[in-house]
Image (tube, rainbow, N blue to C red; front, side):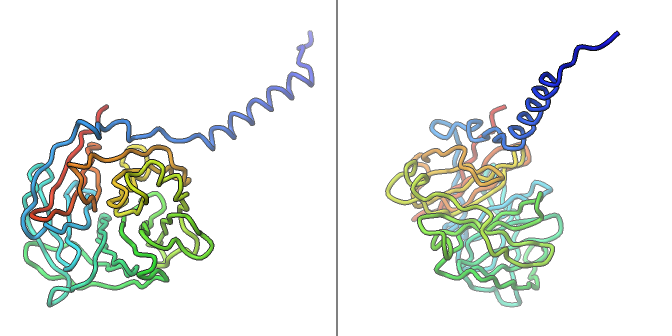
Length: 285
């Protein structure tokens, strides 16, 4: 008895399998942005006076939330529900003063970045303590104007979002660079090169200028926040823009920081004239 498998049938089956493999490799991840009601949802609280000019926001692997302002190397642990300061510590014997623009946390270390691309590495400390720090200098400078920092566990790297110049050869683009925590070096080419025109089309005003970045804990996509442009973009791990939404103008006058709680809830911090604010958006399953 023979089986009626023709060469053509086998070839067709192999082709179909290859197409499925290729399409699967390039399939975009599900957008997490649709899980948040950015227009009508969200609950805002006022932040204490030390965080009026809140600049960076991060969630440590244990779920604790930390923030800093943009002038001093003081790290505040805050209650994400009330915005109150639970504890604080500072960098150096005397508090370091710099233009700090972002903060990120791993299991064992914390990092802050300046607008000139300098990365401060230090350990987490207790109430009122001071910590020693190490500075990693990168080729980025104030022309690049780094405004966001986050940790990407998948690549064991820090991602630095540039508000300014994307780098040589990347005209009309916004760039996110990668700093490897394995060799403590910045990769020469950006991790993401994003079309500025497309970002501007969905922004409020003329320009989308990043002010914060964070990795979503469930989808692995990256949320790119823009104070100037008043919008939020979602980027796939391969650098494609998969979603973008304008932020409510009355709730987000100057959105500077973004992070996610372990349950998926999103936090966005804003500088204010009288006080900073923290807004929480529930993750809708």
